[in-house]
Image (cartoon, rainbow, N blue to C red; front, side):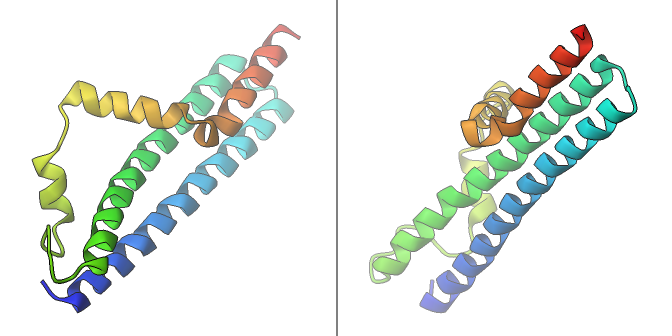
Length: 137
């Protein structure tokens, strides 16, 4: 392991972490645009709710991926602080993840937990409330 390998890994992970953040924001904006278009064109509330729920789940999945990158970023940063005492080798994101990979149920639970974070749940929960209000109106 060399300092340059760790630096390269950190830069790659950080870039991907930020890309996941942009993707999550894009999913939010698409959800909002589709809902507004659905309201304007009188799409049924059931279809709108389904689309919002699917996009919400998709963002939960993206945020779970991002969380994995965050875990590795923190380990790389710790190694960069103490390069003379390596705890992990550089460039081992997938090996590390596979060693700690949860089972199917735990993986689905982690997607749900990510989706329930307030920063993820907004704007989906308010959009579902708006769809429900529109359905009864």
